[in-house]
Length: 73
View 1 (cartoon, rainbow, N blue to C red):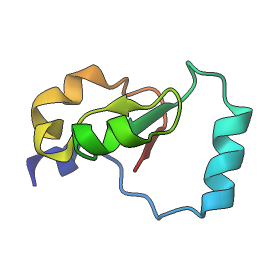
View 2 (spheres, rainbow, N blue to C red):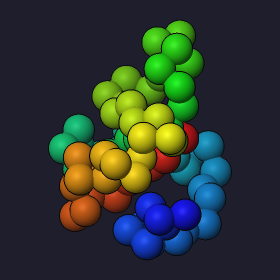
View 3 (cartoon, rainbow, N blue to C red):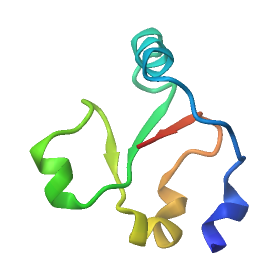
View 4 (cartoon, one colour):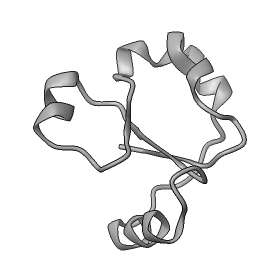
């Protein structure tokens, strides 16, 4: 996949670790990226999450700040 070249591979982190990271970080310190479909996002999402559905990700990578950690779900 073309978009993989822009991302640094990392291992998955546990739910509790993710919650702690979100709680500790200020809103402008991390990007929470929701790659689900818009209807799934509308039903429920993490507050402050950015929606870029997976099929659109390659075309919209420029919207992500490469200097911030990105939590993807």
